Image 1 (tube, rainbow, N blue to C red):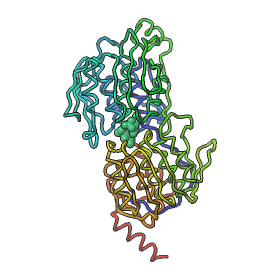
Image 2: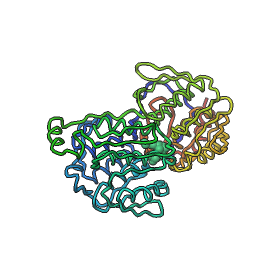
Image 3: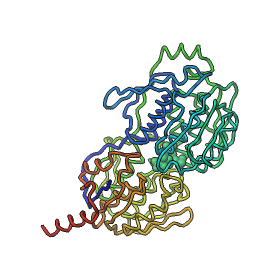
Image 4: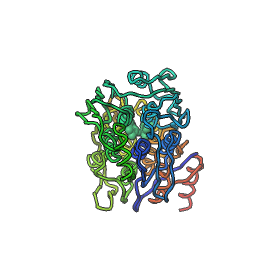
Length: 461
Ligand SMILES: O=C(O)C1=C[C@@H](OP(=O)(O)O)[C@@H](O)[C@H](O)C1
Ligand SMILES: C=C(OP(=O)(O)O)C(=O)O
């Protein structure tokens, strides 16, 4: 599917989509809870669907309550001594978070389960599990550190030391699994060189909201679990059933997505006057840091009770460290392309194993739009525009498609994005939202045809 984005001026109000990081964690926590979970604002991205598919395979029942709410009932922990997966395989779609968060959860089961995925996920590294899960009593085999994985538990929490430098997502999975596995003495996960730390804050926040056993966080270097006394713990199942009968429901609202929202905010800063609603400033989401970048670029931004207002204003190059918020690179490049001067962004080494090798794909696709992106070790230097309309490719990476589409709003001609449906991974309504803000977006139009259309528009004037 192609999408063509024309130079546009934006106006109006838009709600940020649901955060897939928040939604997928809520699915895991709901699976691991003995209580009924009422989830408001559930996402409908492909990654959200993958998480829902996984918890169904593990025994959860998901019911649609109304347009804005689902209910999740789980029997996963009914008999903690004998947890079996309902299915003997789970499919994580293309979601890195889902596979890395749910693999330790699946490993709680005492039967063999095959864990698979699709698209870019099959080439992303999972060898962490080959090293760590056997230390926890889990038998695992993988395809040389890649999918498919076969795991056979049950996982038994033990003191371990892990490397957090590749991804925080593995730790998120261990935290979820350790939280519900039986322990009779304190157990510590030591973490070396943890990256993407705010994502761990989000994990702990969701665990807290679902009443799970939350470990003590010792400066992101150690996470200490104590035998739990809360009602979802396995430590005291009599108490558990008594209390859960009394209080058998958890309500959780999926947060607005600062990662997808970052594209809307940048779109407003380069082509606005818009307001973006639904982004909580109290959120622990890493990508809330986009606000700092917008301010550093002198964007026309105002925080209001109803949302964040943005208007187009002259933008200047800025410096930014995205090591702990790597998903901000694509919207930051779209922003920097519209800034005067050379913007420097740190953290490129965090991009190699995303849906694409994002440092390179940003360099290549923005290069087609006339934007010079230099890669210099862990640093990226983005030379400000003018941005040229061009034929670009999503490279099957949702954030590359959205970055090109955002920059295209201020290009000197139309931009056609090939394989534009990549956005479905995190933000299926992205093009529709741009249209609602007044952008001209057409579908399945060939680049040449789009150019002709612009051309004949000019001739007609
Ligand atoms: O936990 C999460 O929800 C995520 C963590 C980050 O990954 P890393 O920890 O690998 O940086 C981020 O890039 C990803 O899109 C979502
Ligand atoms: C890298 C991403 O997600 P995941 O790792 O969960 O696939 C992303 O959303 O940009």
